Amino acid sequence: MNDNAKFLAGLATGLGVGTILGLLIAPDKGSVTYKKIEGAVKDAANDLMEFSNEALKSAKNESQAVKNN
Image (cartoon, rainbow, N blue to C red; front, side, top):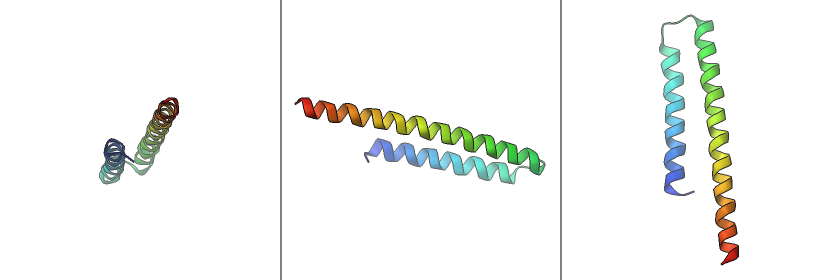
C-alpha cells in the first residue's frame, strides 16, 4: 500500500470514528441519533466501495502497463 492510500484510509477511518462519536455525544433522541449513525455508516461504506474500485482499476492499469513494457 503506497503512502497516498495509507493517508486516505487513515483519513476515512478518522472521519468515520469522529462522526460516530460526535453523533453519540449529541443531545438528540436515541432514534434520531440511530438514523444519523445509520446514514453515516452507509455513506462510509459507499465511499469505501468507490475507493476500492478506483484502487483496483488503478492496479489493473499499472499491471497492464508493466505487461506491455
